[in-house]
Length: 312
Image (cartoon, rainbow, N blue to C red; front, side, top):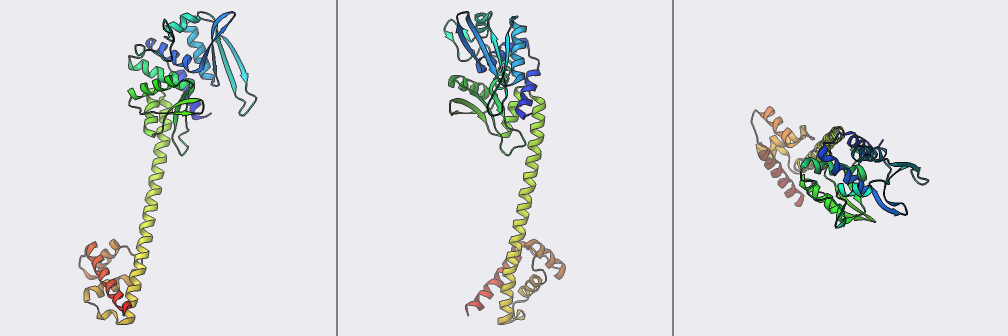
């Protein structure tokens, strides 16, 4: 199963407070259903490819409104050949839509009123329903983090974005082909969203994978940094040895000031040592402390003297 399927299974299994049930079901109906009119009257047709979503809607309709629903299962003939679950609600349709604030005296509404979502728990339940209906999240094992909720209606997408912002989730909005998409990219905000909708187990899985990935990335960066520093030390040491060879060939190290002679001999004995390591070797060899800047200054003087001989 995909990580999205695991998240939806956990959401669908969560118990809801009585005050949150309307908000949750409202999101499910608005996001994945259509309102059809036939000779028999008005009916709601819910379509989803997720079995947990279909089961959640079927169960809530029966418990909250006592309606018998018609369930059909179709199979796609293209691509992944997934099952499609169709739920038809043909009785008490007007009562249900009015109770969920989808249909009011002003007509069909694209989103519920803020009165329904005034409590934080109800707003979370609405977001959980929206994700259960049309949400997806990348597996934490993948290189990029991405969570999104897509819908066919721009007004509804921006309403979801507004509700997410209420919980400090700075979701962005984009139009992708014929879909309106609200999405999060930051890994910590995706974790906050999973916590917000009550997907605790999925959150633990996500955070565990994220921490491991970040830890391994940090180790890799440190290794690369150490390797780069080591290569710099080797390259610098090679150039300094070339300077010393020029001085030896042209005049001899013994003609240098004593302090420069000490550093030159030390570099010859430790050709691959870094500046810090060279300072430690100097202290051990001559029983005299030298700072990193002092060592750098003496090596620079040797370089200047070598360049004089090169020019001559």
